[in-house]
Amino acid sequence: AQSVTQLGSHVSVSEGALVLLRCNYSSSVPPYLFWYVQYPNQGLQLLLKYTSAATLVKGINGFEAEFKKSETSFHLTKPSAHMSDAAEYFCAVSVGSGGGADGLTFGKGTHLIIQP
Amino acid sequence: SAVISQKPSRDICQRGTSLTIQCQVDSQVTMMFWYRQQPGQSLTLIATANQGSEATYESGFVIDKFPISRPNLTFSTLTVSNMSPEDSSIYLCSVERGGNSEAFFGQGTRLTVV
Image (tube, one colour):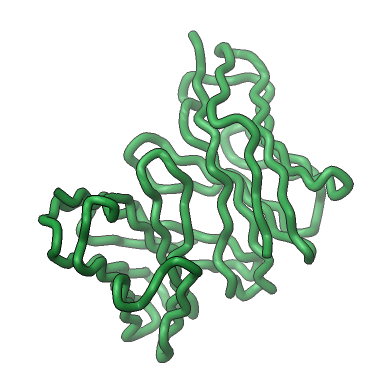
């Protein structure tokens, strides 16, 4: 079975500073990895995904993540935080064989706080 | 992408009653998934619903408590039965599309049981 660990339930950064949200995964087969964002009282929105192509993945809103197999990590970064980035971020893993038959396993989430 | 509509968006229910949540997708999908997000928690997969067959439930979830219907390729329902305050959560419908397990989510149903 697969699992996801997100380090830090809350991360606080200043506006304009680097955002780093950590995600480590465990999977016995090559995984698909995702980052989702959830704004207050809204549904989940896909930020980016890793699907065994390029290890550095660029997503929406200036976010990117790097898949490091040796470290079993998929950390999310953004060079300069904006107030609108304040939200809950979830890392997720799937081992579905393209058909998405297994659903997603989510980490516990990281609440990103942006200080003015 | 996929457009997923969930109804109701929120509800307040009395304990002991049942609520049925509807999920409508704008195009045909093979698999539909139901997740629960308890207050301040992450998402947990409840079950996978495949059209024409029984839903597959994850550990800790049973059909008697969370019966699911999947009558066609664009629609599914999840019923939360005999509710207790511990069932207060956001329930989300999801579909996967794109051949890479990319999941799309509905806006969720915020359930409060009193």
